[in-house]
Amino acid sequence: MRTRTVLFAGCFALVMLTVGAWASHEWDFGIWESPGDASGGMGMQSGSQVDPTRKVLYWKSGMVPGEIHQEPGKDSMGMDLIAVYEGEGASSGQIQIDGTTQQKMGIRLGRVVTGPLVRTLRIVGYVDYDETTLGVVTTKVDGWIEKLYVEETGAQIHKGDALFDIYSPELYAAQKEYLVALNSARRARASGRTGGGRLDSESLLEGARTKLEYYDVPSDTIEELGRTGTATKTLTLRSAFTGIVTHKQAVEGEKVSAGRALLRIADLSRIWVIGRVFEHDLPFIRVGQAARMTLSYIPGKTFVGRVTYVYPYLEKGTREISIRMEFFNPGYELKPGMYATIKLREELDPAVTLVPDIAVMKTGERSVAFVSTEPGRFKLRDVRTGVRSTDNMLQVISGLSPGDEVVLSGQFLLDSESRLREAALKFLEPKSPDDRAPTPDAKGVANDSPTGTQSRPEDPHYVCPMPEHASILYDSPGPCPICGKSMDLVPTAETDPSSHPVNDGEDR
Figure 1 (cartoon, rainbow, N blue to C red):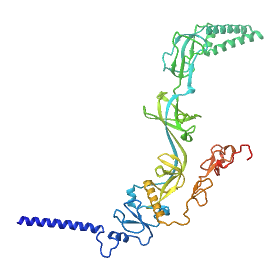
Figure 2 (cartoon, rainbow, N blue to C red; figure 1 turned 30 degrees about the vertical axis):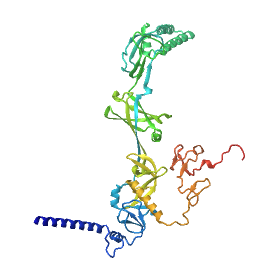
Figure 3 (cartoon, rainbow, N blue to C red; figure 1 turned 135 degrees about the horizontal axis):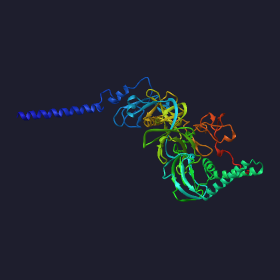
Figure 4 (cartoon, rainbow, N blue to C red; figure 1 turned 90 degrees about the vertical axis):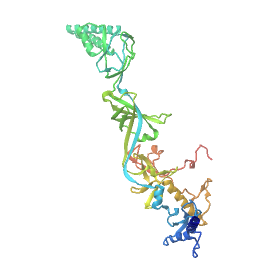
């Protein structure tokens, strides 16, 4: 009996707790209203939070985007409507976002600064021979190589080193002619004769000596021939270059013909590096520009050189332009054929206005950025940008000033908020007689501007006063890049070519 009583009391207590929780829940959600509450408990609370000193434009839902009301109350989710005051709508040109919402939207701010405009290009190149130091060893006569002093490709050669001994009937005959002319000239000098006979002897001697020189016989060898008075079977051919043997086509005992390339020698103390840049990067390349080169297989070293030539043609397949750089190569660490990474850094202007590139949104024809005019207020501005600098910065031509705070992240959420508020204002505002549909212009194109002109003017352009340069338009004023500082650009209005009649030689 006692157990039943305890069980009954427990069940009764559980039922009462359930009823009390349900009543509290219904009361909190405004189903049970007090006698004087006609708009619901939370509706009165929302109305009591309205700032009486400010004008309410409309009421919006904090849970359902796009749901707006002209009176306070609750949204379709049962939550209180939020008041939107005058000055917060899109018609004011600004958006107001409280600090808590900014944190939820992930909005970060950055500052527009003034700094140097530095453009850094990183390109890939390959090491090549310096073509001005290449040399080829050939013979001017047919003959046979009796002794070869260069035994392998890659051998180091210095100017004046012996390359090979060659036997040639033509060289032997040239030696004999020289000795005959030399003896004749000596006899004429010893006899003391003057006149035509002595002049003829001297002329023959000079011709014989010149013939040996044209056969690449060194001067010291000719002098030795004159001292000994004996023609030798072979003559030693010496190198006129310093460098490394890159190709060897000579073999000891082989017959060689005149003009055949026997050895190729390259001086590797200075090398070329050929790099390629895209056509849109060409304005940032100039002859004499410093270049820094690193190679993955030579870690810890940076080679410093300069740009010496920009090739005047474009590779059609890759849309790239080749540039040539020169580097010194002490120790011959740089080998032709190696790939390298080159960094080209150029300071275009010492002081320009710069903005972080992530702050600028590209919309096709326009570039825009959100600017923080005061804490919690943002405004959208049109921005004209120029060259992309290092450290992910953009040059600002117009639209922003140094010191402005711009939004770095969350711009698309701000853009959505501004569009939503603009749509809400258009929905709430009554239609006026001036709100007419856009009328087409003379060309049949709809134009919503009151005057029939474009609402957004074209950007100004500048041109050189010289007639031969007038076909090139520039975006910024300054001296003409072609004429130099002697001529400044002047503003001009770009016209539509279709508006000019075509003169085909007939009167219409």
